[in-house]
Length: 372
Ligand SMILES: NC(=O)C1=CN([C@@H]2O[C@H](COP(=O)(O)OP(=O)(O)OC[C@H]3O[C@@H](n4cnc5c(N)ncnc54)[C@H](O)[C@@H]3O)[C@@H](O)[C@H]2O)C=CC1
Ligand SMILES: NCC(=O)COP(=O)(O)O
Image (cartoon, rainbow, N blue to C red; front, top):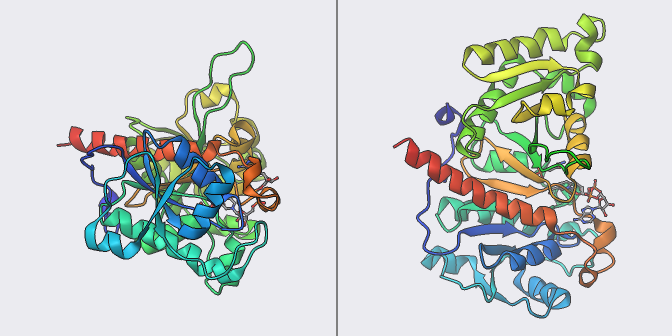
């Protein structure tokens, strides 16, 4: 199934590691918390993972010295990688691939002059995975509006990575580990995928089609098997309308679009079920028998996930011919404006995104060796 989805050049091949896995980390919007959390998380994980930061080297060196004088960075040019590949680095310093910014950064203040440089970090990360320098990409948050202000229509990393890798359809999935209620067992990980991503609410119903949902279910099923090691993923679908349409009295999409897409997926061997009323689906008795919930739109699924796991959750793009993970939050300009040295920005989600990327690379290697 994946061959028809991945029209781009696949970098999803098992990598033979000689040392720590190398992961590209794009540092995101320079005026936001991305540079700080990238440096902190990469440094915290440096003994297990070679996080190679993509951003302005001078700016990152200055930010690092403000955060923690122990953090050492070493700059390389993109051309040096193109010429000789990624050199072996030890954990005593972080490697930065220098992608210069156009304008001086004032923390908390957006500047469209820097928008294209942020995009250049994404392009370099994709190039690096395809060239075999990196096993995966982890992205720090960027400001979508600034990229648009810079003159490039942009709705998110998810769509940009799909476009740049020639992938017809991708799926946004956020995952996290909810805490155990007092005296209760630890709940299973919560994974929430979205049938539509960055779309105005008024356009959601029209964007839901039987075929589109079918492809979304195929991608979730395939990627949970190959990138998460789940043998037979169980997927629960939310309805679109209140009470999943109340038998058609509150909208017909649940009956006319979602239910037939589920039936067709079941006929292909996918363990999909629903549609369930979204307001009552997120409770333990349903979730303990599920590997993923498919919500119909952004603000149907993500508030639940973020309420349960904010600060530890991970955003993953399924369906790509490479591994891409990210944080569960945005640029937090309010925190960035106060300066990077205060430790206001929590880098837990960034660390989780790095760990998840490595785990996914391991799962791809295991899945590939078991299918040979
Ligand atoms: N992966 C990405 O690139 C993402 C980018 N964004 C972008 O971020 C921008 C701002 O989005 P908002 O809706 O304001 O959400 P936001 O996540 O930036 O901020 C919401 C609230 O959470 C707090 N917060 C966020 N991250 C935190 C952290 N690591 N530690 C402590 N507190 C944290 C902020 O201080 C703020 O109070 C938008 O342009 C949006 O597009 C949003 C989500 C993901
Ligand atoms: N709310 C999730 C989000 O906006 C992430 O978008 P993306 O940049 O990862 O596509």
